[in-house]
Image (cartoon, rainbow, N blue to C red; front, side, top):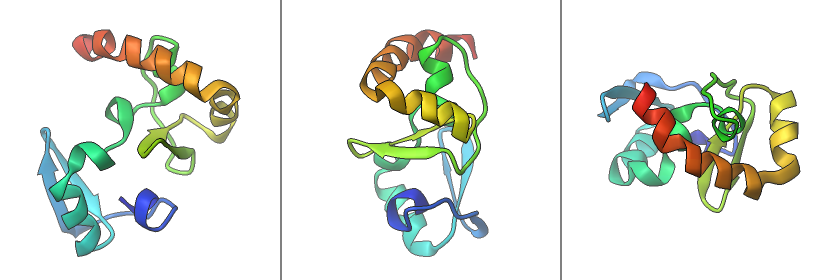
Length: 109
């Protein structure tokens, strides 16, 4: 949520948690938690929070909180700032590829 409200990653607190899709999500404030709770699909990172570039290439990879971008109102995360630079070279193409590959990757999880 902080990516949307504060324009940067902020570590969440146990005090402001919410369970959604089998995971516990932590937020920096009650306001952020309540915004997420009202519309989690709008605010949750794409591809289950995995690296958007990796998904576009057909695999999953972890992310660093600092490598992020909101595109058309959706949050995308990347493995590193370096990978994010690659991803930024063709964001629409990588998103299209990731959207096609994500359902199959999700089945393999």
